[in-house]
Length: 501
Image (cartoon, rainbow, N blue to C red; front, side, top):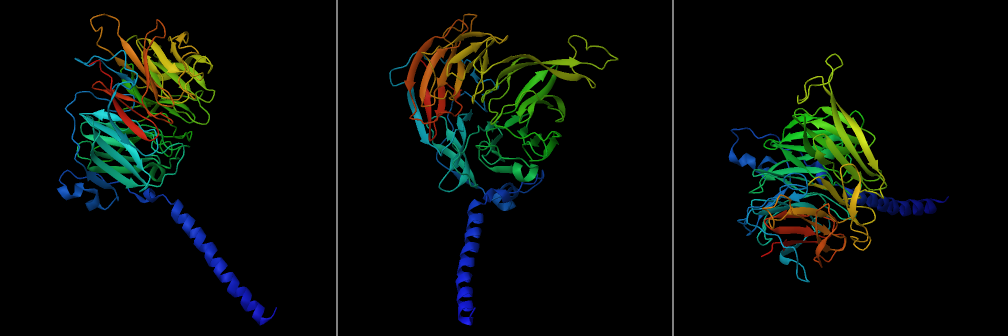
């Protein structure tokens, strides 16, 4: 090779190499999750100066709080978390509120509507405020929004940067709210706690960085739980479940994870069994019961697994009775918890609570094939002794607690092309003097058609129907409070007046 050819080769290779290096660096920069570097805020000392309460002063997170001119409504109703106040997707009867049993052709009156980033995140409602976890696609940030229940105007927004790409929507979880705190779980597993009135930042945990959590396919769908001042979150990494002090951000206990079970889209549901409080969770490898006292594992059942995506949450249908359902050909299962004392003591006396040494054993009562009953996305509802939900054939079905189908809405009443829309039940005061409760079930199909029917074991009775959202994918869980129903599709949230005024 001549000197001239050698020089030409070198000069040609240099720019090509620089382009290759630059391309790699650009890819790494674009794909980086800016929220990975966010750190947990340390507990605030009791005597800390007021300035230390501001996240900017603490220098731990680059979040941003902005206030607007919206104001809390003077309305009494509440839906403070996923599935409402009692974790059952039922709005209890409100004194003085009569729910409509028919609508005009255009449907219930729209009180307000707002645009949202792509997703399925539903609303929580407390003290005249509406809370929703949104995603700002332009600025690439999770946004916790506090709105007025009266008119939908923003009261405040708290945002933090995180890159989220389109994966069948972005945000998809419901905040948990108390008079003091609001806790959210973002698409990439950032747990954030704020003051529920002012929006002031409290603390953040990055579950991926701090607990070796794995972001589920299609992003996190678990809705956080606040119980007795503690945020209860399924990390599914180095700890299966954690309890965090909402005031300080301190980790109070961690559940061991010897099986390496991972986070799913299912949410944690609390229950009582023989006087002891526990949390029931469907992890990747099975369903588990966790002590609310110290996070210890009370029982587990590895025979309940849903391939691809475990989405519906456990449904408590009586003390020690848990109904599980899923999609992807999982069908459903009923579990009964049984307590057994150490052999030397014999069985525990009737009526006695759990003691040290007692064991809880989950017993499988029955399984149902998916064509009899299964639920791909939404959690069924237990109401007045019966279970209601949408089956894979898109029909609404009513089951008894023996797993028998009482009725279905039949093939003439199917709900959407996928049957993945939400449903909720509200008690009407129309016949409150009668012993039988008068439940109304609201069912949203995939395209935004809302149906009103009776929730009774006597049969399917449709009362009204109207298209209230444009769609597509009107899958976000609904909320009912103060005679208002809040629903959403992929890009828009609306508030409907469902009263009979």
